[in-house]
Image 1 (cartoon, rainbow, N blue to C red):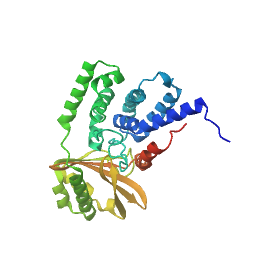
Image 2: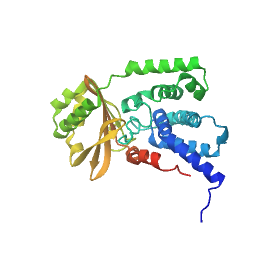
Image 3: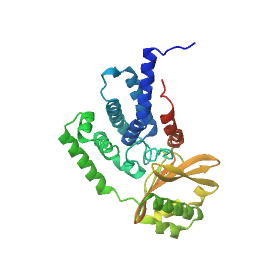
Image 4: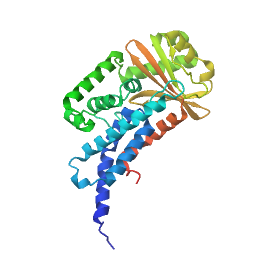
Length: 309
């Protein structure tokens, strides 16, 4: 016996199909604004609930509706997240994501995805961050961004320009992915063997090491500054004893997942320019490591299954 789907069922199936099609982009926007996998997923789930409840017959452009809703929700979450991060113990780093399936994380360009740049984006206010992300990573036109942020086009142009200037004042030109991987491999090899001289040669004089542990034992609670101090910290024999270091794809670049007793314990990513490695970012926080591991299946799920109803 054959049953025709009811109009309501058919309508919901269409809503799911549209949402699944655009979900990688929605996650990409929210993640870049928030620097958190978990918070971005929460935003995307909320967008789905609103999309379900919306009178979709009057929505002229589903992607515009979904992008606008995502951006505005992400800005709201970012404003409250700033207050929460004031109580964070030690340096705060963005939650890395596994980009082996989607190197650009749902964007038209991989812009604003590297860990070092996500960290710099935190210095902008949430609206500046959103405007920059929409323009630079997703190539939205200024009138589209103005509509999403409910600002004038002139104002949006100024915001994006100001954001670019603030970022470029601190941003260094990255090496290409092949050189980045070579530097990372050389760093891990020298650190594991305790070769301080080789390690110092890879680092810039003003190198900084940031450990995100939110108070976890073993993670430095303040930034470690300077080539010699960073090299000494990174070659600590106790840290490398009995660990298994495996390469991973993190935020469009190669990173290292460090396993201790078979369990993932730390994610290491670096930022490097032609002068050498200038920033080491160690994620110790177990919830952020769990979010990274969960993100491995996120892209496949986004392309192949409906959202949670």
